[in-house]
Length: 573
Image (tube, rainbow, N blue to C red; front, top):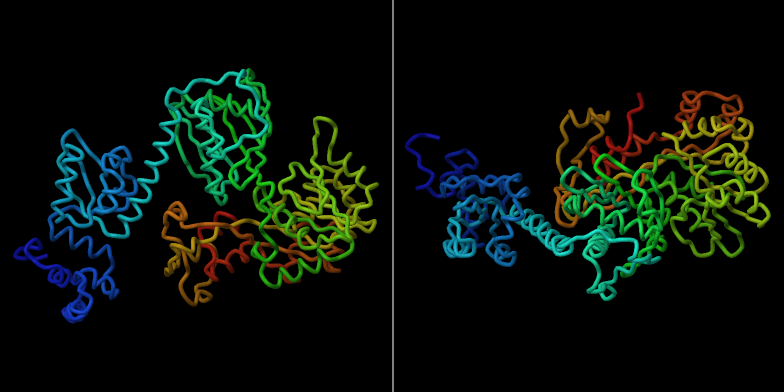
């Protein structure tokens, strides 16, 4: 910029032309358009896609002689400082307090010429405002994030005030009712804090709750769409009370702090009944708690909604309607294996068939299906239960997981004696599932004879529909997942982040699949105890789509992102 040009004595249009952000011709077009819209010139230029909102903010800050606010300054604003300005005032005047010292408060504003608002801030805080300039979109996102945190902090502060350790005399509640009208004013603060954790987790559709002690704080994180996110950080003095309360609910030994413990209980929230599986593990800073939330009546999905591609869906439906044989789904914990099998049972159940399941735990309650919960402590194991079920005249059997040779042997015998068997196995991919069954100890000729379908799956997060935006990927991004630039004919998509998705850019999940229908040549390889590489090569020749390629197909159709595929799948080296 030349030394004789002073932006503080220039108009917005002149500054933009001087910076070569726009041309004289574009300025004249915008001025003509402005006469019709009566908007400010800067906003007109943004609406006409001549400049970006960030360009306008930068130029406006330059004109006014203020610093420009960036994402970090606003989105990481100190919530205790922001709380000095009431939320209603902040939203109506488009301001956000981000920092302070003894005499000054740093305030982001969309309109730094709003002297009335500046004067009101000075009176509200008794501090001198130091103004920085923000654009509309960034301000909206920051207000939602920061004041959302303030609301949660206020609730937590109210509940942890005067926290004390709850003793075993409080008693055991088999069901915790989280309905607001059921809360007692005499409840100990720690009880309210535990209820608040559950309410927030249920509201955010969380599958797991982690309560993790650190040196000075306790991190409370919940798993949303497969990824952990912090929801609150109560003081470390609250840990003993939290652990005691949850142990009491789970009927665990509150005096034992040196050994791991496992338990369970149920909670009732408005419109939901959940089973909670509790695991407690001693760590150097205290006992860590992990709770799995299982919605007992939340079976609101079907095969179509799971994300099956059309061809895979046709194959899967054909196999699950066979009168006998075995269908095995593999993947790591939390990959949606059980969900896929429940969706299959939901589709094929009828009054003409006897369907029985053996599970640990029973994750969903399905009407018309006989579900058995394993209790190994009293001898009700997978093996003993399956032997009894054989005398119950089943047509279709779901075994929650094949963990050992005994369970595998019974499952195979069921499949070979005219029953349709569904089960899961922990394996990395579909070819590895077949070799895993052989490793467990099933004879190759039995595996080859009974298997109808092997399927591996993963869950990937969906791009949030509310903040979805197109972008052009770099060659480096495409190379990371081995995607040929020639196959990318248009834009890819990602989420910008919004309050709807907790600023993650993702909301909801779908499954990606790697499917092997057992063709004649594959059965022959299994009979011959072929290695995993040979089975995989034959499966590829028969049309198997690897997990990585299945994920990339969902990237290209705008459902998920490259980042998610890198997180969920591995490259076939």
